[in-house]
Image 1 (tube, rainbow, N blue to C red):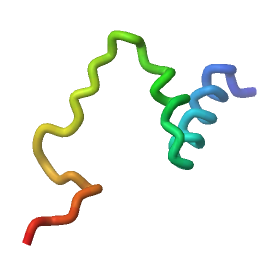
Image 2 (cartoon, rainbow, N blue to C red; image 1 turned 90 degrees about the vertical axis):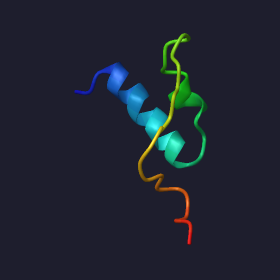
Image 3 (spheres, helix red, strand yellow; image 1 turned 45 degrees about the horizontal axis):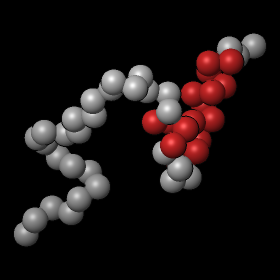
Length: 49
C-alpha cells in the first residue's frame, strides 16, 4: 500500500508531465531557492551552429 506522500508526489509529477507545475512546486519548502543549471548541456535548447 502506497503512503499518502507517495500518492501526492506521483500526482504532482503526473500534472507536471501535462504542463501544470503548480502541484510540484507546491511540494517545495517556501524558502527553497531554484538555481537551475549553471553549465553543461541544456537539453531543452538547440545547439548553436
